[in-house]
Image 1 (cartoon, rainbow, N blue to C red):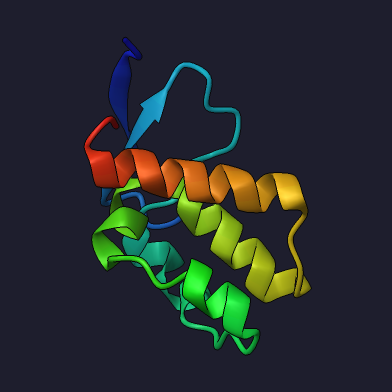
Image 2 (tube, rainbow, N blue to C red):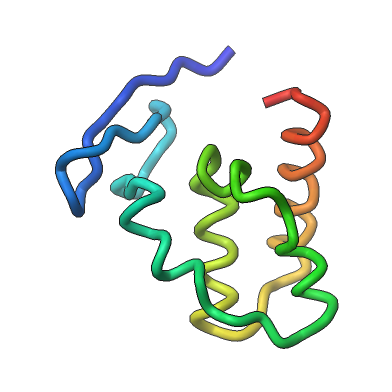
Length: 96
């Protein structure tokens, strides 16, 4: 079992974000990162990959970061794609 605690968002200092001990990066709330997620995905394969419920993005910073990185750099490694799929599958099955 992973212990989670709340930490204030590093950008807005208003909203709280769930953080684990393993978190290395400063955490940003969904409201602050929403603008970065709104870019257009043109690749049909990636469009299908990122077509998940918005609640998944709200709950999981990893999924948000993967999508932001794709929108910023235009590609993802095979390992990142597999990790994204695995995380979405776990969230769909209710394991997270």
